[in-house]
Structure formats: C-alpha cells, structure tokens
Length: 53
Image (cartoon, rainbow, N blue to C red; front, top):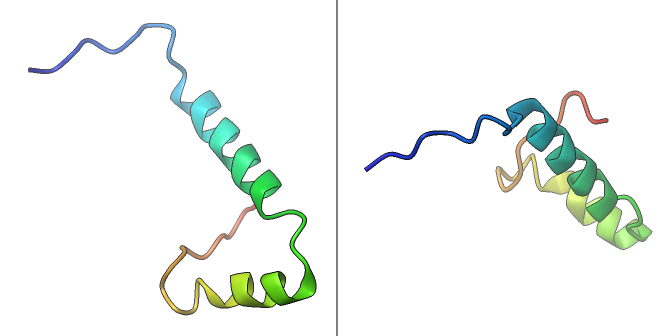
C-alpha cells in the first residue's frame, strides 16, 4: 500500500536540512578524528562529498 505524499513536503528543503545537519555533525572534529574522517570516503564507508554547504 502506498501513501499519498504530503502536499506540504518539500524534498529540496529536507535535503538541505540533512546537509546542514551533516556539516554540523562533522564540523568540530579534533585532528585525529578529522584524519580518520578524511579516510572514510576512500575506504568506501562514506560517499565522497563534492559540494558541501
């Protein structure tokens, strides 16, 4: 059974909010955490981010 989408739902706004939350989550890493985070896309754990906000 599929539901009718909410007419007030704005997928672009939702994606922007998710991107903002992602940026906040990873914005205050210490140097060791940043180095590990930088390796995650290469390891295939996280997608490569091209246009971060």
